[in-house]
Length: 264
Image (tube, rainbow, N blue to C red; front, side, top):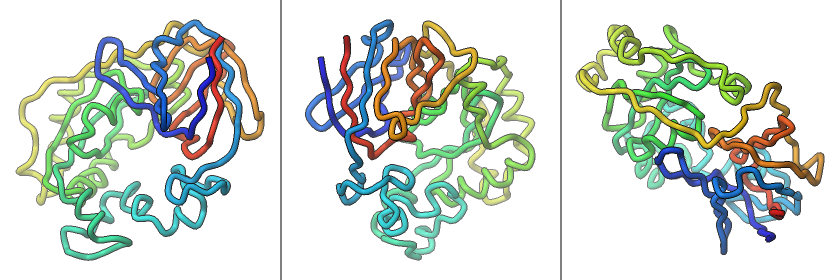
């Protein structure tokens, strides 16, 4: 069977194991059902997620011009502490920024390659943890806007990592941590503006990924350069497809590419 469409990050369902769906405009694939099957991925063209044109993707699924113009790629996306909608101050599109920034946000700890701090909208729990390949996570604070979450993350980054080592995550080279102890240890570093939002009592969330074989030495697939790749799918973790020959393909990092996928 053959499928074709523009890549966007895989949709997920929080089950045991997590269910992954690659969604195209008129079709979708349940990636769990493709485990142990041979798949061929072919690059077709670009399709910017903003303007829809066949222009090289710059970042986050957008061509260069759209990346610097669309509200969906403002600096506050990656750096929540730069959010200004709570001040009624526009970055690129105040209506959109209010819609996204002025809603409950979570500051969390996740363990994917190591314990790291992160920020997400409350509505994106546990999706954000799944996308990062975390096998365990816990909320620290729940605040009413993105700015408060951002300044809390900045304060905690002095005491805990804020990046994931994708190779360690994919190799499953991780150890279990007591995230409740981590949460309680970091409480003292929460900024005064967010202290009242600390979550005193909650449990870790554990996540199980559909992986039959972890790669010993992950090799990242550049489908634009290679044009075509074939391999047996043996797992899905984070937003990565894992193949038997240790090739891994980051779906989210390739948003905006139109691909043809055939399943043998």
